[in-house]
Amino acid sequence: MLAAAAVMILGAGAMPTSSAADVDTSSHAGSSVAVSDVEDAAAASNAAASANLRVVQHNTDQDEARWNRVVRLAESGSWDAVTAQEVCSGWVTALRANHPAWTVAFHEQVAKDDCPGGTKGNAAIHPGAGSAFDEAFDVAGEGKNFGIACAVFDKGTHRVHACSTHFTVYDDNAAEVRLRQARRVKEITGDWIGRGHSVVVGGDLNTTPTLAALDPLYKHPEGRSNGRFIEAAQLANNETRRVGADTVAGRKIDYVFFSANHTPLSAGGNLTYEEPDDGKHKILKATTTLH
Image 1 (cartoon, rainbow, N blue to C red):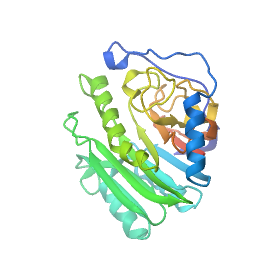
Image 2 (cartoon, rainbow, N blue to C red):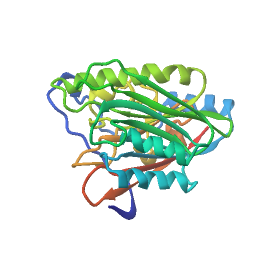
Image 3 (cartoon, rainbow, N blue to C red):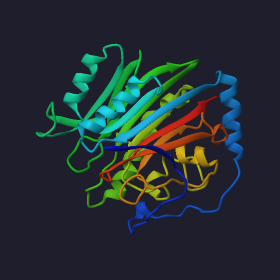
């Protein structure tokens, strides 16, 4: 069951470990909008008209009631995309049958006998016309087929790729595997960003914001970060620090990233969440403006 109230995400959370890929070397000092972010905003404003973008992110923990909850959010017409993890393939089959006009992408990650359809993975939903994409990372981890699923659609004059992914947690060298997985996300999405498209990456990344495994995704703080994305909590707090309230078990490990080419830090945004009574992953609701 989910609490009805939505709470604004504020604050910061990180729990460094001793692994090389989990070394926290980020600055915790607040900073103003960087010059490169201003350049991103200028380039974006020259390319397309502004449009609001609304995204829901949730790891369902293979709970069908919680899957149905985010599907109802998509059905409400208030959200452009839903990214979800630990989704049973049978649920996806039923969703496609119930909403044939929707765009539903799915990446099978692992066989699961207790999952309707027999497999579990990542889903990306757009409640409208578009195209579906999925690709494996080809990064060894847990014996699973980690990868990404994306719903591709138009929002105003913008082409949007809304993607869902889930990083490893159980590998002996999990931090290093997560770093390689993040690099694959950067590679896969880089072509779309290079073509001037907007990219959203939502997921359970199983690591906290300031750790090195997420360097390939975060654009800020500049220096150690080498990605092309602004995370929803950065937009909501208007700061370059890697911030965010806990999303499960006392840590922030769930994210919504927006590509900086159309959503620079100056775009701002809102980030709220709904907290399940069972203490599992919260539902993240992120809104911002495409420029």
